[in-house]
Image (cartoon, rainbow over all chains, first blue to last red; front, side, top):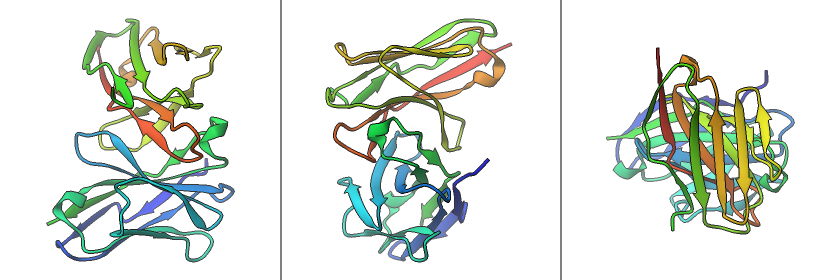
Amino acid sequence: EPEVTQTPSHQVTQMGQEVILRCVPISNHLYFYWYRQILGQKVEFLVSFYNNEISEKSEIFDDQFSVERPDGSNFTLKIRSTKLEDSAMYFCASSEAGQLMNTEAFFGQGTRLTVV
Amino acid sequence: RKEVEQDPGPFNVPEGATVAFNCTYSNSASQSFFWYRQDCRKEPKLLMSVYSSGNEDGRFTAQLNRASQYISLLIRDSKLSDSATYLCVVGRGGSQGNLIFGKGTKLSVKP
């Protein structure tokens, strides 16, 4: 079964450093997303990406964050100048179509980011 | 009112029990509805989409009431393997990619 893969599974970084979280979405999917889940809290939408550009972003996704699809297969989330409160599980997801079509979003296994 | 609100749980039930989860959502423009399940420290996985007419998948039945902005999930003959957190998820109205998650209801099925 095709799956979304994320690397690394766990990333520890010092406050103020930049991190790049990597994702390989399912190959025939057109929509890509990043979500995060702070420990003990709900899953929160960060950004959606379609046709090589951001289609939507939440209030969380400020100038500290950026996304890129550098080579047609990888989809990355860059967090600049990390803060302690950025510590969370970051999930990448992809779907064939947008959510208006009741389309399933497939989630990767997540990257646990710990900022120390 | 929270965007997606669920029973806080936890629900502790014996094997074979029937358990029902409820969820309300605030955005009347939402057009897509789902139940996901999440095991501890794992990714959310789709359990089922929810359609206006209601739908059933084996032991699982989902209902949607748009007028009341209410979604339900019924699990019959619960198994030990059903133990997980059940997430009510709603697509933001007018959005192609923004899923709004409830905080989830934890279910523990005991032998």
